[in-house]
Length: 508
Image 1 (cartoon, rainbow, N blue to C red):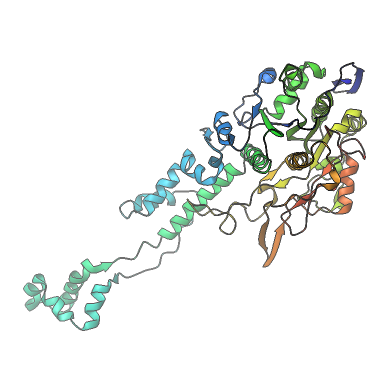
Image 2 (image 1 turned 120 degrees about the horizontal axis):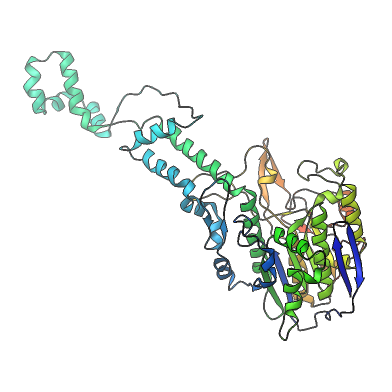
């Protein structure tokens, strides 16, 4: 096989004489390993590349999914909160859990209770009216409204009986002018009068709800939370849709992209000295060891030298194992700075730096690049929370703001889509996988929304990419995951590797 030495100045080969494992044989299980930050390591500043070779490789399936989640002690530290957020189970990623458990919402929950308690209403009013930017509602003058019982007295003509039945009225009646009689009438009916709710109540409840929603958006749209939720929902998709067992096994390694980058730097470009190589290759070269057939990187290769080196490392390890490696890729390699801002391929004018372009071109020409695929664009993992899409139980919440909505969807790494398609194909066909027979993936979230009075549909994979756009992706070395118009489906036109015009090589 080829042994790779890398430096920031370039990528060069030295020869080696090791034999790669034979392709997965009929009846042998296909082993998929996913590399991702599943515990929230990066947000908690738990970065330790030196221990990468000792990380646990955890098997996960439908039966132990929740057990694996709990065992990783998933924790996030976000800038909006002084306290870390702890998640005990998968459902804890939902806003209803966050609302009940996160200390940021303690005061808002308390205010809600006070607003609905007449004895504590004024205390809540004082608090809310002290908020910066709060605009008090215009108060209307109102009169007490008689209850049904009093109204019945008034309607029946029994006003005099009502007055005379009061001992107070009888004592005063002989000496009371008409004005005092009216006062007595008010005293008599007062116990039956229901006062209108304070006109500020609705405004206060709305103010608290909006404050709650704004804080929830800051949590759910924080990059660390989005990354964590996307990782777990993507993994759940694999677990739910793959028939794991004797024929197919799924594993995860809890590791951040930053740790992988540091690991490469620590080994000075000699991949065989890297912690990742030792974990996935060297430590498995024992009786009963695991030979991984598909390595999925839950991260994105950006237009940076260090990211390209990471991609090359995965390609080399995959080549050593006779496997394939898949991770997310940036659309910038295809000249698109942002799919959200420039969905039209004619507007793709972005250029990588000369150094990055040269490094990327060198990787594309390596033979090991045939075992590496970078998938793009991303795909939608769930519908946005909202009254018409996915309502909450605890409070009214619209996840998407009015403007700039694209980035607030929960987008997943399409490396998971490609992994799912290949693993399903292996389950059906064994190692005789025919990529041409892999059809669309259906059942993805389909967001139908109102666009200036007209119904619109958000594409499952960010945009409706044209044939010309697919060609640009392919020419750049990206594996394109394509939305199907007005459908809950995506397809992969061709399972190309980073190596130009070449299908992804693997144990098939």
